Image (tube, rainbow, N blue to C red; front, side, top):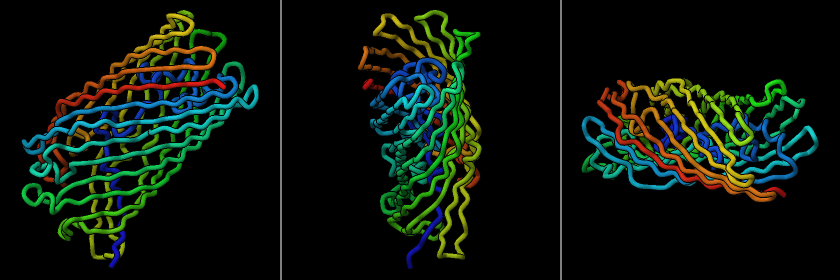
Length: 406
């Protein structure tokens, strides 16, 4: 008999690389270099991902293509048994195009990743933690058609629709040790979901050196379909080979940035992003055609979190600019409900970069390093309150963006 499941397994996922939860913020090299503090200063097509209201300042038709390469390392200890992540590189592509329709209206389309992760632990077969998860991969790509309106000389507003394509997989084993490979199972799924965003930028004439930007992103309800593939079905743990479907709402967020131009050459900005991760509370697994099988509730108990960023840009020449940034990224992890998928705590991110532009072309490059705090705690009572420790978390990001004005 074909079994169908309702599986909110995406809730198992959290970023192994560099961002709180599994959110990503690497939308352009300029933004990465400035720590994401680009909500209220100079506009670029990639503003579609950070503050779409800014695109009213772009003339004609403009486009950007970018790529960020990410490497990460971390160690997780479960019940005193430690493993490190395998070396790997994750690539985050993006594109943006804007078109000024009239003096007051600009349209845009962006494509970028807002959520993503990947990682596999070394020698997982003999590791206690592989019963939770030893490999995970999440890939998303969002398309964001947007309209921005210049309300007056001081205020611009924008709204956009988001179509998010998602694919994920996760590997675990029922019995670490000699039977690890025989009892391994994989959860996978894909889907398309919808959301939106609303933003503004305010540049008062009475305070010409200052500007303020803000954006709200709605929750994105995921509708997924996929499958659980089990090497060995294990009724005692409700693990079967079965087709699966499910839904999950990714958290909404609010972001804001305040920019200051002390001189014509200097730009400074400070910002904050608040993400409502407390909605990430549990995983549900229910086999639809097996009425006597209990629903599994895997509690996560994440906390709402914030991200503080500071960035600066100095125009050393009409064509050249230098940039730097700093981010404090608060982790939403509950130390009483830890797992093997988020082997870092709060993060400090330092970044640098440069940019070149002429009348038609622009090229931006950036490098950022992530310093992660260690964290000690336990799994939830559902998993036996096992002692867990995250340590040696670090990550590097390399970003490149090329732009063109038509």
